[in-house]
Image 1: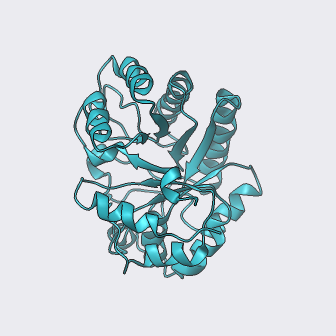
Image 2 (image 1 turned 120 degrees about the vertical axis):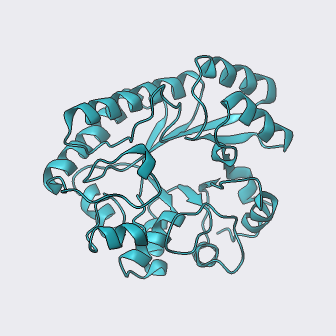
Length: 290
């Protein structure tokens, strides 16, 4: 019988602030061989060598996600920035990540959609200090250019996905209800794909928080978007901030996924620590299949 565990990746974010070779070894020791390489690890020059060696030795499968491999100097990736320096830095980072992903044999790479503001690294996941928004039409144009260009760089050697952003309650309050993040709702997605087609990486935890902040029906948002993708991120949260918490049966996120009877989707379990990992895997084992 087919199981979602056959399609389950575990995010390397489980072990933050470590070198990727050490992170991979910890995951291997847990019997995990499908790994999404994500942000939060320590920069070092031999990371590509280690990815290749460990993949061959342990028959690993990789996907790349957003801020991997980490740069020497941290910055906030924004593919919609109207600050030319930030935009060019973001675009070049993504180009380099795609090329490395191809070299190490990854099948997918996902980047967050852009923002209408630029902010500092110490504001990531926290309350963002208010400043003026970029012109949305100009920012979207730049984001769509990014999508087109990065798809050409990938050249059908791997699939480039773009992920829905999270609009938290603290940021809703800071921005007086106006969302500075692109691609947070189903309406955003349908608006964008009328201009340019792209594969959607649907982060259900992000969608749950954004639905709360924007007073949208999460179940309806999920029903609209889950049929448009074959790649999901999943974790639990309180509906106000993205906590990367372990899955629980009572979670609205778990309930809505079970009701949608997803099939053939790659799922990444995106937790902030090893606590609750096995419990979360057991929960995913129980997801319905079509």
